[in-house]
Length: 199
Image 1 (cartoon, one colour):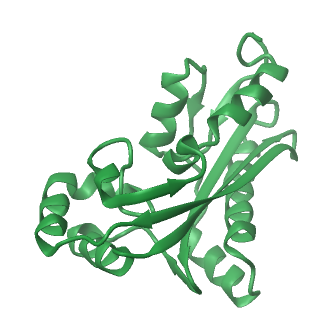
Image 2 (cartoon, rainbow, N blue to C red; image 1 turned 180 degrees about the vertical axis):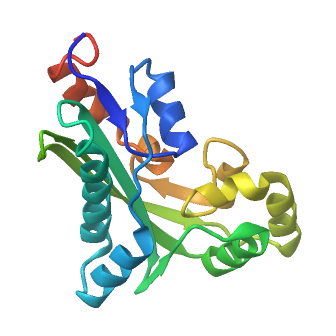
Image 3 (cartoon, helix red, strand yellow; image 1 turned 90 degrees about the vertical axis):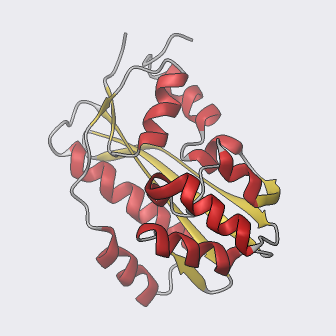
């Protein structure tokens, strides 16, 4: 086996993706505070994808300082519709508000992934997914919030598309794995090139 891979995230969805693909890794959460970085990026009028890249790099860099020889993976997603960016919902009330804002409209879910080693970026990937949420009835929203609960609040869109969350959508254009949190196929190609997994 080659390099050690560290996931600079506490995201259970990203951890499950790597585990399901049989990728050996350690998860070490970064100490990066996202809110001030997002505020700075908004002030500088950076796009959602530029902001996601900035955040992904900051997370990887934070953990990489303590593990310079490892491949440290940072990732971030930003959900936007029009000029509005949504953060992770705060509890069940926040989740309900998110769903009411997004129902019946298309939004973008951008994903940025950065891998750092020895203080430099050795790989990065970004993509954009278009998510078209169907018109949701009040009954469905209440049912979804009750069923999904706090776990849905761990994702920026308040949906877990690998489960009941798929019922929220009429259409999803883009990479399914990226919507879940990591662009798995391009990532696996890079990890094979670095002998983290067998090629």
